[in-house]
Image 1 (cartoon, rainbow, N blue to C red):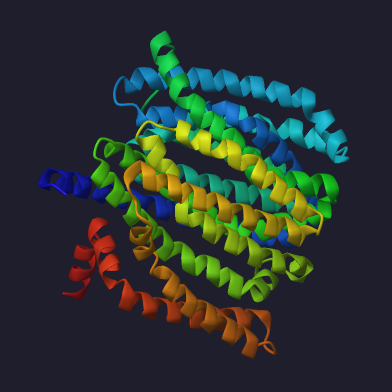
Image 2 (tube, helix red, strand yellow):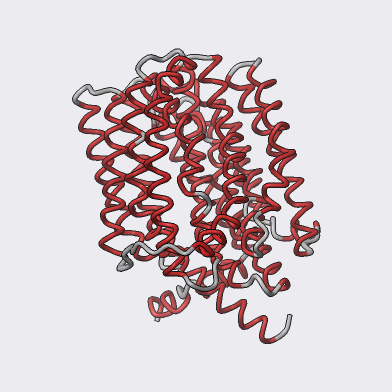
Length: 493
């Protein structure tokens, strides 16, 4: 790597690491609050309440891809005329969101008929307002992401989580059922948009530029196509369960999926918010981009491996403590979904590379043939119950990840051996798994709380000690990039 390339790489990675640090502060605070809220709501509401909301969210997710049109990614990747592009994107997104709300208003009865849930009509119609409310602050959020200014995102995201939690828990305790979840969601989205307007000085001005609109559509079309297929893939399990099973089963599946989604999948989307702009800054330097991708895999697995394997090991006491005894059917599902998310994490950020180099079409070309394969796996799995659906997801993701890694090798020259060198965290993960499972087995006579605490301590200790011996240099480098090395030196002096 040339001196110029190395300096550019260091500059971008340092900025990205600091951005990721702020993003994790925001993410950690809001998700911790969300998990506490979910834990309380799981004791106040019935499984069918969560199942009904899942059906409404599922229907909206299939249409939500049109609300953004891929303009957010296009705006991040764009090199010039940012203000003009932001203006065009804002108004197109706003009017597209209004159109989506109207579409859902009219199709809501048909969705209710398909899922055989009459109450779904009203829930869908009210929940569709989130499209319009979210569009009000969507571009402001993208502009913060583009500049890697994640420190300013803390206030709107944390404030929204607090407001949403307060409203949902209050209404649930008053006996409003599923409407506690619906109203909490609406108020949360509205508060986020309002605070983003306060935090971000940019204001939309009606300015139409046909060439800019065309450029945004050209880039965003592939992103939207990929989002459509991803939405179908990610939600087809909910669609199958909602159609073949009842809302109680869907509620159980939703709870089982929620912890891996919150702690792992959302974590990787947090990284994407930082890595896509960072990779875009390196888009003209293939060598630096390759190094950046491999480093990303290493640090992602250092974080994701203990979360995934930890949840697999302590699934039983974890579900009982966090959600209550009424959710024990979610325990085996959580174990399988934890493995599924672990497989996802390995090649998850390959898509950020494709988008950064201006080739989002690769994502679409890859997704098209993989899409029917995943649907077949899920459909076959559904014939064997909820566990079968989870196993179908796992099988499909193993195939999908292998394909993604083969393509990333061709695009930026990442070799299999180079990738394997970045997966040392799996060694520490094996130590964690054995330690935690041993404690869970030996402590079956204890209460779930003590069992959970002891197994987390044992697994966490085993993981940290092993990581310190095999990945000490990576941890030190990460502290340096985030500017925390000087902090600890001052503390120790």
